[in-house]
Image 1 (tube, rainbow, N blue to C red):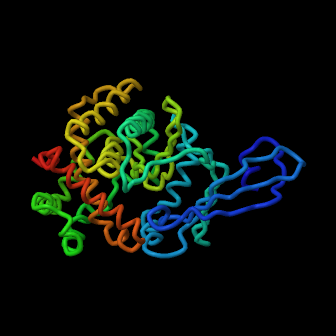
Image 2 (cartoon, rainbow, N blue to C red):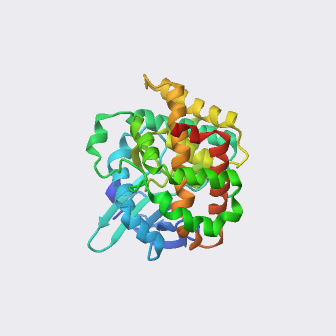
Image 3 (cartoon, one colour):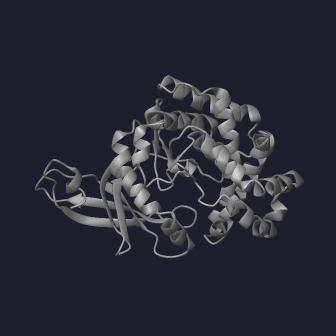
Length: 343
């Protein structure tokens, strides 16, 4: 039924189903994810050989955070309302269903078999990151200051509802992870903790678009093609109506090497900004983009700090991911002098 729902043709009936669990610590703790291999009878047009199915996480802190952030409905509505009007490569969506009362949610989508992604812990290649940034910039340009944004009331207008979340979690974070930080990082963290409202105001001051919100190596699928269509973006649970350059910061400060130099950051923002300009965005200079990028670097530090408890409860891979985020995000704060954004 799920496949026939999206096809104008009469599909053959599914004959066999084989399920492979794709979830696991550090990969799918907000959702259960499975690959389903399918065979069909001969009465009609066969459907895809396999699909990927996303379900609600069964239990745990990840599910609690997902429910609080309404991320299941957010991604479902993305595929229903936004994806069909977006000029980037996305997985084909065959079927969506959500029943809040029954605590039930599912998305059946294209299996990206033959595609690959980089490892968030090891880091992403700069050339791949540049291709991904060009792709997401096309998405940002499509929704840049669009009147449609006002109709997407199911999309939050900021990543963290509480500007004080960093300050709330900072003492506990320091108790657990002080050994991973240098003196400059501790000093930066203290200043970020004291300026939650200022960071929120800086993030709200830039032009709005739809941003992915969790734009990292694990959510970027790649092929060996040489054009932009070699990039496919998945997992839209954290999409937000915010400054688009946050996605660049999320990738550069979370999925690339912690030794990224300021010149590398400037190059990535420049690539993003040029792509925006090429796709019709006007009145937004590179200086504007860089100021929003510095605010986004500060905002990204909320991910390892405010979410450290979640990462710590999800197994070794999630802990390794947390350690990488700590190193890379605070290195970016220092390298780009992001605290200057606070004045």
